[in-house]
Image (cartoon, rainbow, N blue to C red; front, side):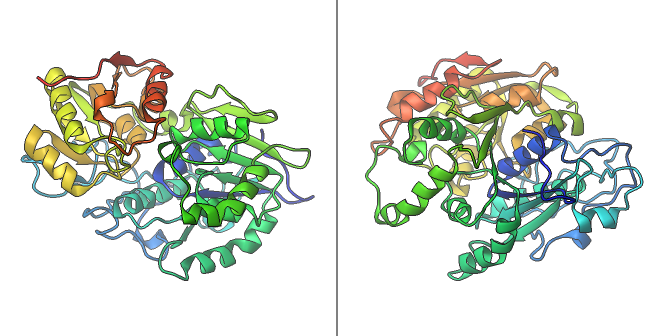
Length: 442
């Protein structure tokens, strides 16, 4: 689906709603593929710094305890550490963040004009609306990704969408006019109640769903089967009171996300999509923007391990997970553990103490951190989105991605009946990865 002109004489107006750093990364990938912004020859660099921040700019709390480094152009040598915060015996405090990238502008376009106008060179206007969560690590990564979006010439609107009881009313009321005028809506999470509610307002003819990780696979399958939209790790349980109360809005969102004569639907994904609903356009995300913008990385001889939030979502038992991490690190000589942004501090401190791993909290999505480097020659992961995305982001670098299966005995008693099958499917459909058997106690 190429960018479509709006009303006569006006560029197509696109609103993108994101609630996580990965969603914003994939909006940038989608916009790059569809030519919403063609940087052309590089213009003068504009720093991504406090002077350009939205209200409520990045603070130490938002960044997980680290200040944001700024630079007008990247220094010749990258920092030796890929993220702002480390937990472990070798690091007692934060280290410098990844430098911000210098802004690249179309030839002849002034920096201030591009930010104020927000109109891309490809004839399509893109405004990214961040529906900010409350989690400090997610907020910190979103701030950094918002800077990158501005560096590419897009407008970013930061909404404290969960900042109190009345915040949703202020957010929805403030966005209503833009929603009605938009020609295209891009969303990172069709399961989000916030996004579903906003979909009831828009009249846009084009709807785009960009990757929100493995949930995209389930969304497309549910849409194809005409099922209600439910996250995979919650499927199989009885709907709660809030689910029942919100059911009419969810049903309306599912109808709007179903293609018709009046509405086009695109799914932009790096995930394997097998059940494609009639009329839905599926476009492959190969991380072309990431590869063009960052790297290639410096590669170390050691192995790195990628964490998962399966314990936090109630799918995997915490003690079993810690034992699996310890055994996996020992078997493959891993020295660093890249934490998922939703992993709890208590769990990470315990991992550091009992495994000896250096715990790294990245300040950007792992695809960007890995592409900038330094990164291990082998990346070990449990079933998650990165087993699909990292081979694409690191194509041609020689880095090997290996995925370890989840043993059924690790699952909690409250895990969804579909959990094991879904996680096995995530692993089995991954391309260009080495599959490891579930690690056993030593």
